[in-house]
Image 1 (cartoon, rainbow, N blue to C red):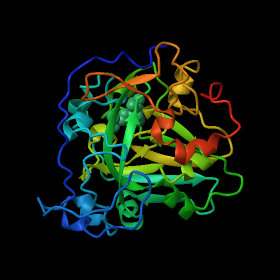
Image 2: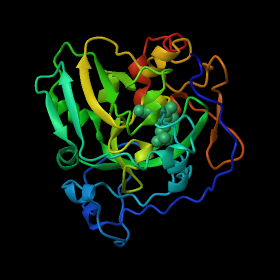
Image 3: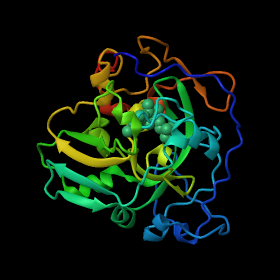
Length: 322
Ligand code: MTE
């Protein structure tokens, strides 16, 4: 059972980014200062009625109007981001995820936060939108398969949620679990993977300001194929750490098992920080193909977020703890 990720087809994609259309009245109130690649700016005129999720958001998202990340690289188009996906619960075919996920029902939804916390709680999705400051974060997503995109997410920091439930002093890790719905997600019938998909972070990684619980992209509710209604985004790690459609977040004192580490421990570690110096056993990680570009580009250590996260790993040999 070692066929984790299939090879990446080379295909030409439109570069044209979708205009950033944070245009809804409900997004207009800017929501505070945000870090790194996040930008505050003005917004365009209203282009339509606010969605249900937007209406629920008392804290509106920050509006950037940006078309590039902080390195000057263009955003990928909405078309690219929503039609080239990894979501094995539906299919292993990247272009098949979008059509196969359309029948998935992301509402109603709740997220249970439990384990080593002082205030365990089951959050209705609407309350997560309402109670936590929604921001825009433009992040690079670097898949372990060596392709990448630049994606304008909206969401809130995992730290803001964890601070509310108050991890106990014993808590060292955070474990995440994807919804289990084999009727809607036919891939969960596959015997090759230990469902449900689960992932984990060390507590300090989870508390880092870059770590986002994303509830949308390009100002839209999260599309089903990208992990509706709520998914993790950890931009300095390979994309498989960014688990989709989360129903459980558990604080624990043990390093959580993860789907990919369980499936192929020799290929996928727990940390999985983007590292051009450590190759995957079956391919190089030194470079990547940015979807929309023809030639490959060099992969950056920590996917370009080293200033914010390298200190988390001081003293660790990252060629061993890959
Ligand atoms: N989460 C779940 N539950 N199931 C998955 O198959 N794939 C991962 C990650 N999260 C995956 C998942 C991988 S390999 C990547 S690269 C990203 O989601 C892709 O996110 P995207 O489709 O939004 O680009």
